[in-house]
Image (tube, rainbow, N blue to C red; front, top):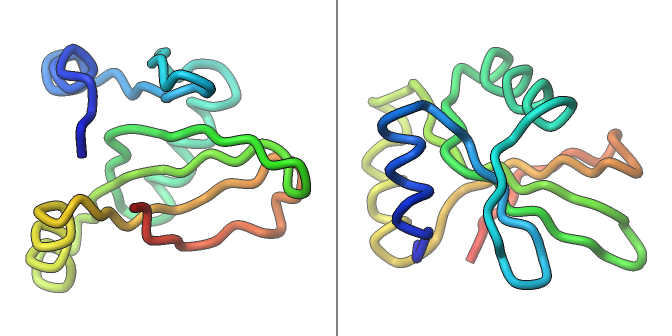
Length: 108
């Protein structure tokens, strides 16, 4: 997925979830409201978020795409591994301007 290697190591070694911020994709650790939303998602969906990609859209506002793995090994892991090998990942998107529009999304 071309995730910055130090970001991977920080997650692996310290459990830190990072957010890629535009315009250059610089990574910052999730904290405050963003971290609370990630934890809420993980608990509700029995999942582990490994990185977040932040995007801004003129019409939709700020949106965070949570890249994650679920705890449902039998249902998802084989499909997830196949998708990742093709540089695709299932993501859950949080829209800050319209929280009602939370969606599942295939991130490419």
